[in-house]
Image 1 (spheres, helix red, strand yellow):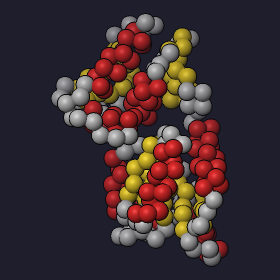
Image 2 (cartoon, rainbow, N blue to C red; image 1 turned 180 degrees about the vertical axis):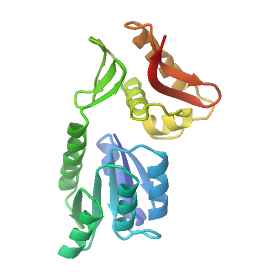
Image 3 (cartoon, rainbow, N blue to C red; image 1 turned 90 degrees about the vertical axis):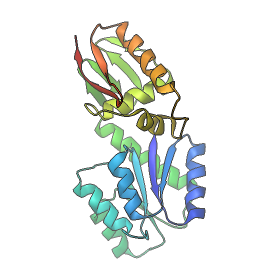
Image 4 (tube, rainbow, N blue to C red; image 1 turned 90 degrees about the horizontal axis):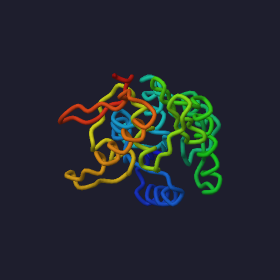
Length: 224
């Protein structure tokens, strides 16, 4: 699960990042509102955590712009402000939840689990033709057949299906599925795509994953 954390205090950001990575979340960190919006425009997230007091654009402005762009990703706001009017402003800007600092990390994790459960229950499946993913059970089906995938294969397939019809570069796939940079010359994405295609081909002759030479891969309605 990929989370964007927008926090300008480096010590706080690293503390939260380390704690969430220990819970097996993949974390991107933005240091100001402008960078947060750039991340949102170029990546796909399961949750966004916004500090209110961000440089350039504050958390309220960032959240408002995210919602104006039609993005319904869950947003959790963090702030030292305790006034009711600030909480109201945060929720009115489009945030789903609001947590004041200092906070218990256990409560923080519980809020994250609650928000991501709500998101999954609102969209329980991803579907491309006869290929579907159940987001709650992490099971993959092609028609009535279940496809057994390794974790990274599942991660690639989910990321591609969330971006159906869009060409995704190898770098985008690496960053979103592995969560950190590899040598640009690595063929690890190609190896996993080949394995995914082979497993899909066990149950269908239709082609779901398409290659755009020199650009990357996209998943779309099948050919053939």
